[in-house]
Amino acid sequence: MNLGKSLMILVLLFSILGVFTFVNSMAVVSAQNESPGGTDSPGGQTWIAYNASNVRMTALTATITLTIKNNKDYVQYFKISHLYTGSLQENQTIKFIVDWTDPVAERMIDPVSPELGGDYGWAIQAGETKTVKFKVSATGLMGNEPSWIADAGAVDNTFWPIIPDMGLQASWFMPNEIEMLNPNLDLKSWCGTFTFTATNFASYPVAGLIRGPIIPTDSALTSSDPQAFVDNDIAFNTNVAAWDVHIDPQESQGFTYTYKWPIVANGTPTGNGQCFVPATAANNTTTVPTQETGSPYGLLVLAVLIVAAGLGYAKFLR
Image (cartoon, rainbow, N blue to C red):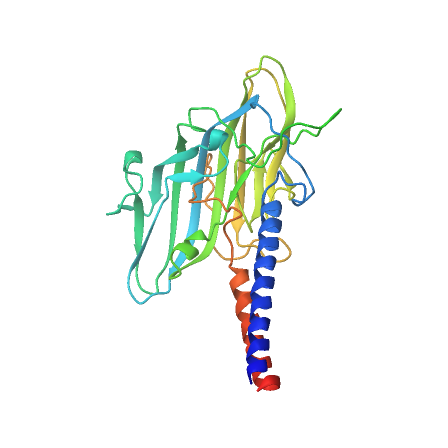
């Protein structure tokens, strides 16, 4: 019996050691996959850090239509976020103001951003499915202050004699983040139309790739103007709208792109939500996924190994 207990303890110790090794490896892989600057990221692209961007963005707006269901047996609330944090120039935050809502939204009792006009949102009754539309516009950086999305994972230029030019980076978010913040709310469909203006601030013509500054994951690019191509090497399961541009000094170009969520295996949108697309629009969100987000697979593996060890002990060593 003592021998059996000793073997059981050894099995558990080796299992825990293996789990931590596995989790550490997964974290490294996850960080590489989610950082476009990593050499092991999708597409194998390495981004080279640059000092500044000749082309910068302004007039960023978003018009969002979504359908959401309350699965709880009492009323729930949800509201529009004013803040988008990601890889903006110098790691700044994009701040949005609400232009309009449909139906008319109410002011919430617990504003996150009172300096931006207070939080607006809606009540959703028990079992109710509600569709709302709203438009937000950036204020400050990417509003009337030119900026761009930088790549936090870019590496210093130690390569010679030539290096790739990746153009301007994109950031991304998950449309159904609200389900993680409140599991009682079930996002049924989401549609967003984004607009921005790109201006060449250099005294000479420039060329390169521009990508949509804010991109939803697990979503289908349904339209764009001018016509965009899809860059799927930036982030896993994310179709990034991108444009090949040639811009003269002080020239400005406007861009519009629309996404629908969710998508199925063949890449087409699902759900019956209608996308409201006005003449201008862009995006609002809450957070951008990072290497710290995701399911705790390590704990699951640990539980499985412990259970397996227990069963083995019960069957063979008792």
